[in-house]
Image 1 (cartoon, helix red, strand yellow):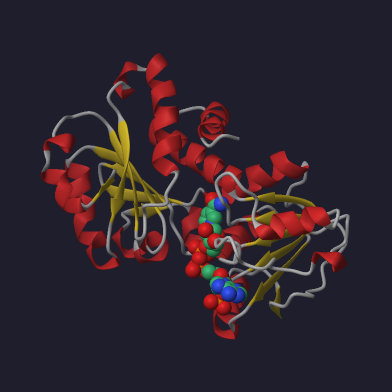
Image 2: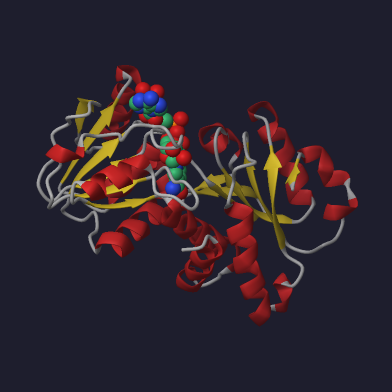
Length: 296
Ligand code: NAP
């Protein structure tokens, strides 16, 4: 069921149980309620405080985001996830923000505190954990190539830099957005190669390549790169995902002998980290429950 902020006045949200939500527009496609409610049910088995806890999806317009946040706090919402288009627009409404939010200028997790909403970004953790578990590699000292320069690419780039990657390249279609991200990276004292996105982008040996563009969301999207030229020593992580099927980029990459994985596990690990921020839940066991709820 998809709610709107007006539904807060209904009986469904009248009790004092801890509540959680994801805000977005569009939001109908979100898998967060399935996986978060599965993990909350597990948590409730050991901790009766969460016996009636619930996590719901709300369709929220950008223009109303900041004015509705106090209403959710008053209704005992403890934690909120944010997806398109709220990750950047929420920043002025935060009472506090963790270092990753400040660096990436994007926030996907809100925690209610006595002084207001505190912002976190768990996307970088989700990406890094999914890459570690899929390929057994991490960002430290790695040659990292990020495709895209939107919100997800920002989170990925600053996570790789914070983990002291060996080099960072960012490739994007529009020059303007690419330049803005490259400028922000340099303003933080890091370096990066800013490249135009093309099918035959040169990929270094042993690189970790992350597709953070929207290419792959639609079933008929062509692969984001020509994988016949992709070094077999490098790995490919596709942030877009399709439930019950691999993205066309992952299919093409594997067909060319490249180790590749798509973004569903990242969704689970970012969700597990959010739940642990809100409730103290163990990230590893919450992540496993969430992966299982997604059929993984
Ligand atoms: P965004 O801010 O809207 O950025 C979209 C990016 O995709 C931009 O760099 C844009 O380039 C590029 N792009 C879009 N269409 C393109 C095309 N036809 N050709 C080349 N480039 C194109 O979106 P976002 O929030 O960063 O999300 C990006 C993707 O990551 C989405 O698919 C999203 O579902 C996925 N994601 C997955 C997870 C997960 O947990 N797995 C988490 C976050 C995001 P321009 O600048 O040229 O427009």
